[in-house]
Length: 255
Image 1 (cartoon, rainbow, N blue to C red):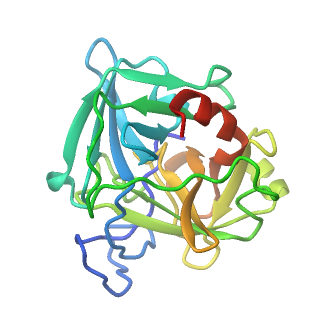
Image 2: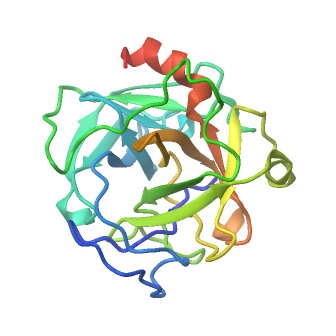
């Protein structure tokens, strides 16, 4: 993916609005602030890079995609708001991509940013749950609905990030549909799409979390990894399946 910007919802902090169908988003829906959601600016030695998304999983760790980590040396993590100018930014020089990440195929596309110091949880900054390592079924389930939030591009023609976080609602597809678009390994990847409103992610949201409810608890079950060109709303998004890497995440973070 180029860095999907979740077709999202224009979110005003704390506001719960009716669905917004404005031209600023690709068929997204308005949404309240998600306290786990992170904006990630990643930079190399030449101070060049791009931006994507991530999910706070502890007081020191953010899960994102490996493509936002490999080849880069600094990560500016924005937390605490769905309004870009109100984000609190923490800079980190420590991150790790999965050791078997393959950039060409996006295999094992998951990584972890370690913040330089523990953060204090508040009503606007708190971690998302992870699936249990021994959960009896593979999550997320086929046809299960999840949502993704990000500050990425709001159309295929956009060239800058969004001023407000946006959200897309998508359902997990069958594996054969996913394999029509992406060279993936099952079950390490899965795909999800919105077949009704055609909301989708776009450039600038790679690494953002796919969140589903497990027994009523919002849980990180996917990481945005693959998109088609120009944020095609007729195509699914490819996600790294978090459950597959649960043991590795625990090894790196003790979470």
